[in-house]
Length: 243
Image 1 (cartoon, one colour):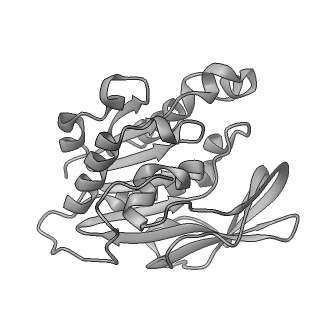
Image 2: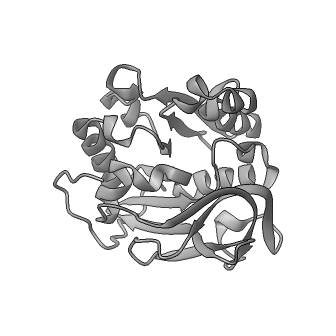
């Protein structure tokens, strides 16, 4: 069986400006995720970052990508409309997309879901987060127990302005009492999209074994299946939109 070709994209700004983040992720958030996937042995992994030519997402790179992982936060508006459209088109053609944490504010996520804001409540107090697995039979939850517990995280709370997911795998609870839809699956054109909430940059979330397990599972779920018929979800507008 051929390895799944994965590109891990990161804007790669926090690691260059915040010593705490650089200490947690000396090779960048993208480097930590890519290293885990390479250790898993069933993935062919490359990385790309915002400041590379064409943000590292040339037509050739995307044509050779089965699943794209996206982490962005500070610089959503610096992603060119041309590259956002290129990624959107590849998802509609069958490439899988996994959007992590603050990537909900990215142009790519907004275009594919048809939301301009992805607005939500948030509080960065380093609270305990418990992600409850509500679909134990889903491939993304494979190998997990009843929940994932993260000792310190940024709080995201409802209302989360997104379309209703095709499948909801995780719901988060935080110490302040808020809940959040943290594991959302969508189908757009021939592509599969998974939004996974954990991953605030000042906490070592991408060293957490259960979080990494979910990411690996999600890559396998999102990878295109050769010869499979298209499954069309709710189609979002194709024209460029802002955040």
